[in-house]
Image (cartoon, rainbow, N blue to C red; front, side, top):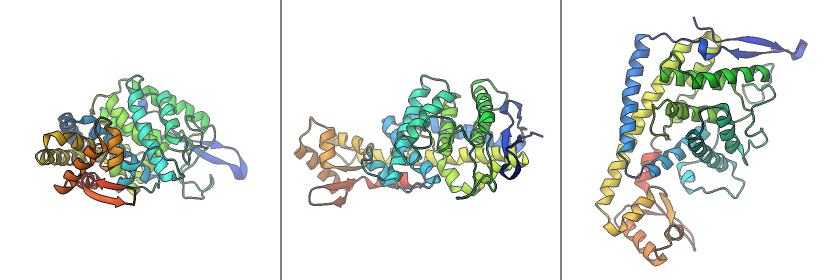
Length: 373
């Protein structure tokens, strides 16, 4: 049986507590049961389909941007952030004190930074610290040492809990450093486990080590995408498992804890693989709907107006003023006339309006993205 870890006693007397030391993943082996094999086969088949569908997209960058924003919203919602799909397409760098929007904004830019860094660096602790710094800078977590691994003990539990009644106490700072070094080696070496099983184990191990004072969940979910791309399994970095994890949040936390308490690695891997399968199914369906929507609307608009259809896939909530600024070679009057033609044929609808500004919404596009939120 795989032994998930051991405990270290810290301090003494009434202040004593036991922190968990996870077994290095190099010492863990997952039995290749019939159920695991079946889930792996289905997961690889669907990942291949997702890669194929994503490669068929004409404007890949627009689609990727939309899914990074969607993942940012879902991942931040798991941590209690209150924001909507409309918010994530409206936001530029927040100038006010809306910390929820700031959290999502930072996640979007942290994920883009992670993808850029991963093209130059192996998946390593240095990269994770850089991404963590961007994630927390200027948000409600900016006092939690952005970009630094913790130097003090942390714990998990209900709001207001202490070390005395915590649900789980991660490794002490010293043990944490050793565990992170072992995890980094595991990520970079050729392991005997299947790569999708590795992805499940890496996510579990990172969340168990809990190396930051804040942002561990969001970084851990980014790590899934980065690992699958590192292993050349995933072409489309907008892969968002956060919807599955949010929909099954209680089971998600229970499965992680049951590995620590009962050595239930196989059950955790099955849960994780089911998440990959469900995520692929949802994304393939949504991407096909988006492609069909684009093709339908391409036949509705004049060829000279295709530029606005392309723009709407990047900015589905827009105004004539901002659109005009994005296309300086076009006059404001010309941009406004094109927008009105899109309203008349039903591609755009009028959104909020004031004396000075009227917004427009690419509603069919947003409704497809809203499906899993």
